[in-house]
Image (cartoon, rainbow, N blue to C red; front, side, top):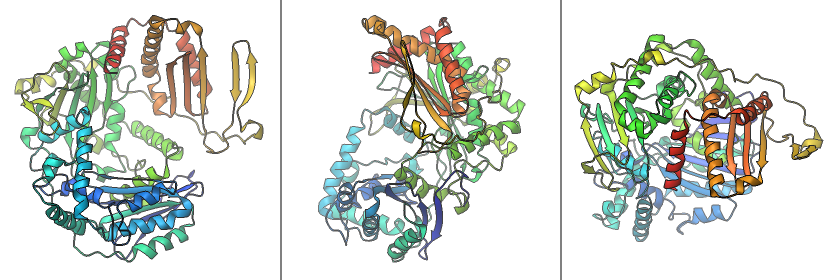
Length: 614
């Protein structure tokens, strides 16, 4: 099993006779044990006449089983033994995960096994749990993300299960008696909650042999009773769902435009990661890039590239733009400039050094990750076991050892106006429909053919350049030996107006560090006008610094420049090798920058919008 040279943990992947796949992780430093089990089923397997039934099943599993009949016995055991527990039902996967004090690991596994073997699905508790689900649903009525998500569902292929209401509420469950719901729950449970449709990850400080004995002792008895039903998925988008514009009226004050491109599934390309390469180029914020161009023209203040829906048979690629008032007037020009940049990428090709640079960045993130909670890692690995072969379970998210320039260029062919969905989200749009469940006002209409042609006839190409090589990639330097006198921070300098402390990490053993500079100044507390001016000054500087040091952020060198009650602070963190130089350069920029005229109105408008929303 491929793992980082800096990873001190031990791994073992086993498969039981019943088909259950298990990843065991020995982490001698973890204080709590963590476990997650994931099933290859989610709301895509809901009954068409009972949306949300998989979500109800998730809730009901915690409400008693043959061995522990009391409702919430598992939750209570976890809570009283230093742990936490949670579950979620996604589109194609459902996961159950917990952490607990290490000495109670075996008892927790016993509870988990009992929960998955013979749940009671008590009819008397079904109505109570429906009330809990309905409360969850009502709590999200004002959530703009949920409201947008529902519009997405209503504007895709109605035969695809993504279009179904996944949460459930009183209305979806009301037509059925508790007995009928119990029969539906049993059917889904018996068909999909089987060992050969599950993956389990256990993270423990025990030896792998001890953990293996524990899981075998319990889960070997779990029997597979049914052959999994195979239900091929239809396409996510019909022809009429592409080449459309969707206008959405938000509750909060926001001005976004999202360009979505429909792509095939990407899991087969996990060793070449073509979309990561495209995201890296499209999302670059340096001079010559898309966002820099939009900012110069005062059309957009923020751009992110690469998110979107993903499933076993589909992938959305989103380009998410935060538009200005000016940008709203020129949305077609914004889109035309985007396609000019795509044209530049196609004509220039994808040089191999770009992919190698992304591979190097991935390697850095893999070798020296931020400390993750065991419960989060257990959940992540229980999902990864469905996506990667056993030898790449740990490496899969970072692996880029089979670069394919041609595949990456082929993906660019999907970035065409006919394959695009434009979502415009702002308070000024005109709408004709209301989305079910969340009452989101929206409209959808095909994009006229002459407008589709216009998007490809832009003359902006000469304004763009592809990103330069990243000069901030850190060199590998040997770590210095720990000096005991500095394992607690120690004052090393004290002058008039300046105190400096230094501490050396003796726990994480990574070539990383943090530097905090805090400035206190009485003058900034002299009234609301000065306080507001300070916040605006910090925001203006951040705008300049974020563009100039965008590649530093990619290379694991981060900064946070922010106001506080007594003044302002600059924090840098990441790889230590060049961090003090990085901090010095930032501080110099903060002092010498005086001209903010180029982006003053944009930043002021964004600050005002933030205050209005707050």
